[in-house]
Length: 109
Image 1 (cartoon, rainbow, N blue to C red):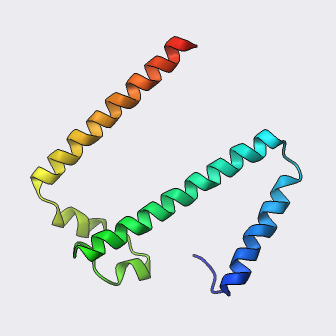
Image 2 (cartoon, rainbow, N blue to C red):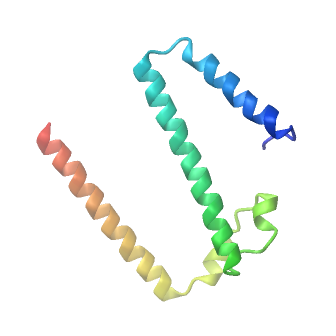
């Protein structure tokens, strides 16, 4: 849970942590960690935004984003079988594309 502190202090804490982390790392290590942290931030931002979209569509209760509840049951109950099949087909295509990319990388090693 994020503490109840003023926004400026919250932002300043990120600056302090960032400066503390750079002391004992090489430039490549800093780059790797920075990219990892940005990916974490993107996942959080994407999830929050998409939950807002689902809320806007009436598929998630209004208070859920404020209370931190995930409401997976709400989503599961609101999606019909054809939506599930479409999602599964899309995920299978993604898995096949990723596997092809992995195989291509292996061939090039």
